[in-house]
Image (cartoon, rainbow, N blue to C red; front, side, top):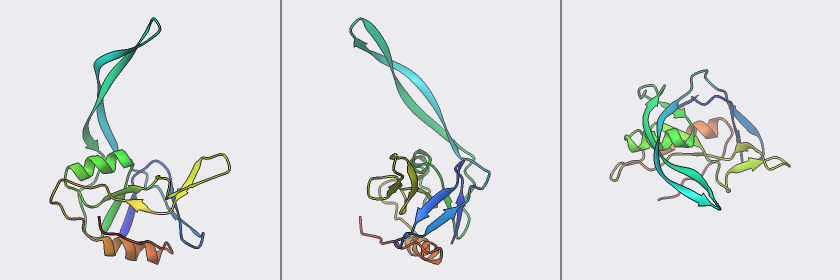
Length: 146
């Protein structure tokens, strides 16, 4: 399994023993198009603060699926890809159980990657291949049934 980082920065994954594995940026970045649609406003005192609905569109820069390749993208891009049925797209898990922070609270790495759920009935594939690739890189992972 090969991991291709499509974010604008290196991804740092900390293994169970504290070692870091760096997934270098590839130089290609995935983006999601969006449109802000006026919805309403919030009144604070006498000031109206606009409220918009953000509608997301196309995924730009995501390569076609390839055998034995997982693409690492932002969480938003991974969610959009999963909604389109892509199972080869993951994101750094920045949730409280996974994020590794410095003394100032800034995220400096993660302990794992995440794959958002796709459309109902779509099976997650190749979790064993993902675990094998991360183990090869020195990262311990556990998968739990959803």
